[in-house]
Length: 76
Ligand SMILES: [Zn+2]
Image (tube, rainbow, N blue to C red; front, side):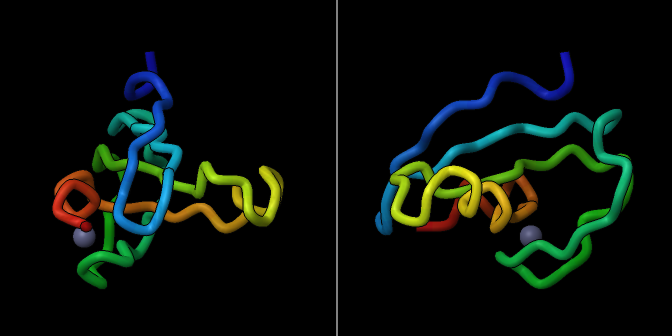
């Protein structure tokens, strides 16, 4: 199990897919759009992409973002 099940969350700007990434699955560093700080390697976090299909699933997936779990949680 690599970080749990994908699910959908409602935010103020629409529906979002959330795919949790476990520390074992986090093999690259990313910059979190919430706080602008790096998400280091081996840090569990979430990957998010739109679930309301405006652009289509492939484009939404291509535009996915990596967030600190806490930063995503406090995003409105
Ligand atoms: Zn962050």
